[in-house]
Image (cartoon, rainbow, N blue to C red; front, side, top):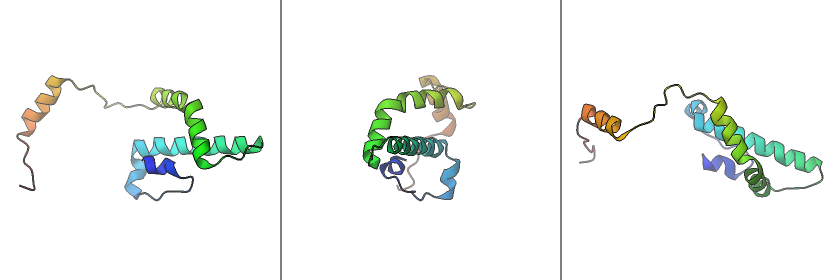
Length: 100
């Protein structure tokens, strides 16, 4: 996902990635950086993509992440404990390396 934010141009991803929540969040962040760059350009500042990304990240990333966490729902998200991880391992049986 980091590659998507490295350049301003569109980064081709497989169609199955469009449903991935991490891809969608990364895409939203990229759009916000593009808006920031445009707004700063309207003010007379000509920013490169790395400059706009760095400034936006410093100024707005924390607020954006907080907003996304508060507004996105994760209904199946259950915090794992050591006992729940052990239960899953016990039910699935021993790990077998397919390359062995």
